Length: 355
Image (cartoon, rainbow, N blue to C red):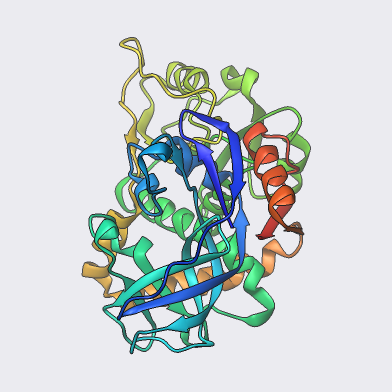
């Protein structure tokens, strides 16, 4: 079973049966037990062409040229293997399609994990092609599988965003759009952890929830951007809303040190940078570049240690507000996906899906 969306109309989504292909030497079949659904997956779809997210799990065949599979983060179990790199019964965490199974071509394996070296995935960033062995993963805990699927990929991005900002800018405040999104919450948590002032921008509907988190120094609604204090700032744009982008840049004209594009939770308000946008021009944040930088400067081991320490704090804190929801079967999964697409899902809910 696979779930496909129309690339040109993300609300057009179908579930279809998938005929399992016979394995070739070096391949393994993973049963996808569960995966998380968040606004981050909508971002993958919005930037599917620009960032090649559609290319990870292509829908083969000329008749399916307009269809795509949105990547998700999940955990699966190897149920069949013709690979020396993994055995039947092994549990793996990583990047999956919204589907019931995935066949990978294994390679570059070590005790921590392995990589899908299928030809169509070779051009993509290695971090997305890596599958981590749960029993060898330093952040894995059986009682935190849901946290890892739902929050860790977003927190990992949040950690890197905050690390980038802290390393390169001396702003007095961080302004974050889509403040109720889990990526924004992670950024705010990390920034406050190092003592930075953080301002969240959100909808009137989500304002009370965002304030209840107590990690933002101030929360303003999208129609109140003019209330932002004009202090030297960095803007972290997770909404991807052109109106919000221009409003923030106009309000902070002359004191905005950097504008970072991270997401597209407001997928139906795509950013169109007009000629009259106050400087600086937004720069898209590419997490693998920051991973590469820190791996060279700190070493991969030290980077992992720092992230693991911050993650443990964050996951424990998140237990105070996150409400996990299990969605099972194609109809329920599609329903949850459409809620995310409409932006109508309660921000404290975390959907853990299974087909």
